[in-house]
Image (cartoon, rainbow, N blue to C red; front, top):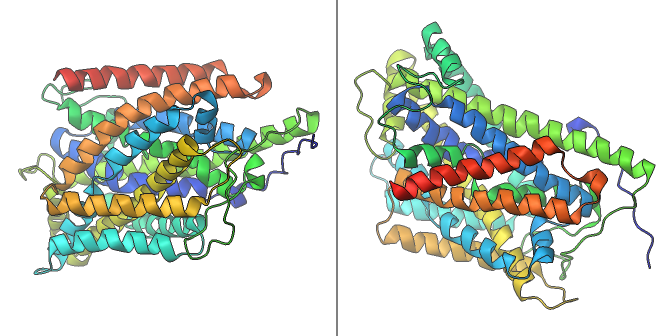
Length: 457
């Protein structure tokens, strides 16, 4: 029997920065740019407390997902397969259905068609889906492609958001932000009377990556070489793949004083990195974009119509109150964020689908070329998205809201399964504490309550 490996020595915090940018990028084009700003334009800032709670729940889920991969090296999906052979079937269905909906490319195409009059919106939407597939197919490393893309979009977009918000928002607006963070709206607490529960639930689910995509953080820290993930295989591009077989299952380390010290260091590092990038930048982005929407649309007499028309209203007001260049820049930034989210969603969901198909069908001891499975899943989703769009199902906010509600249900089960996994598969010293267990249980109850209201309503 081979001697157990030791945990690798943790790097510095600066060197750990990266995986959470990918997950943050998945959120930018959904909750941050569309769903929370829509609520702010419609109801004011009193619902911001929901963004705080939602992103906190996802922070805990994501770090508990990382806990398992740090400990075992493998993805949580391999861990779920250890629990029961049919669990992968759930993740195939609950990932493929919500993320085949082309909401993000549809929204990006809608904006680009406004920026370039006369261009075919349908052609742009389909073109963006095909571009996504091409980028992920020809790049040398999936992980590096995703990290570079999302960092670039965030570093370009966030400064523009900061400039516009501080330029346009008044002191009274900032006071409304502070009130909204504790649930105080304009004459109401927590919820306005006319609130559409589906709108709140969809924004709450996308106060972060949303749905099964939170579990993809397991892949990104594995491919970054965190913890026992250092000893595992990575997925390369279709043309850059040199290793034909993929190792699905990992191994843990010996329970020694040395490894316990290294574990504590790793655990602190991934929590800090995720707190800074995912929770910190994510919440700041939600607040700033919601405030910008509130300042430019809410209470100004501009109608908040269906779809993403409020984004164009924001651009018009920005042009009127600043410099016309900034309104155009805002729309370009929005299109970039939506495209980045589309790329991230398809990449992450294809990872999840392909690995779970393999885990469901492979025989014991069998090794597979996961790259081929990945690209089959990726292009299958792209083709289905093109078909759905071509059939006329293309209203952006409807597609994103529908996807979010489906993902809220999927995420509720993710909290349950990750809790069970860490309880059963980790040695006692490495298991989550009572506070984290309580937060995970509270998240399940929260989603169950609002999903029930949505179904009954």
